[in-house]
Length: 166
Image (cartoon, rainbow, N blue to C red; front, side):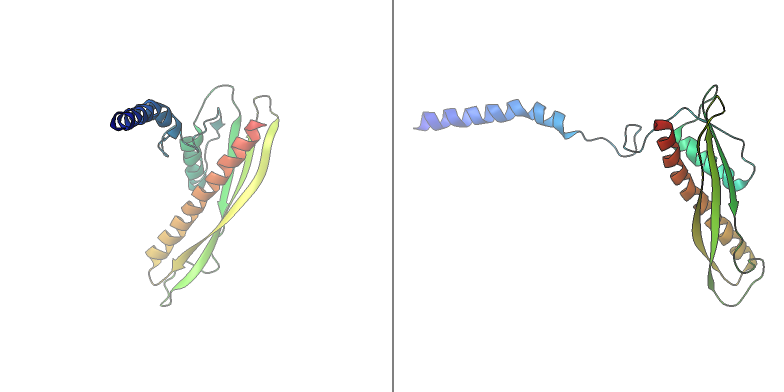
């Protein structure tokens, strides 16, 4: 009986070791932030020249996540604007108040032949704190607008991917 249990144990160990490579091949662990990750999609597009800081932020984020090409490829054009808050950020107040700014982007993707592939507008509202220092108020507004531009860049990226996949 001892030799049959020994043979069974040897067979089970042998089978387990035989399946290790097969199981290892099934795991598929990949780093999230690598080029092969879920969000890594590059497309052949070029970008218009930015005319404002917000447009520059959007184009840089798009180029980082979508890639940047030259030559005969579709052109992505973004026109970004930001609204001023309801109160003046250039004056200091003694009370701390929450303010909002809205960043709006008009986006168009134009094919090489001049055909408009996608055109639309997107906007996002960001909050910031207005307090007792003028410089701090101006920086908070600027940071909220740039945060809004980065958020819009992600939305625009998804729209460009969708438009070019059709």
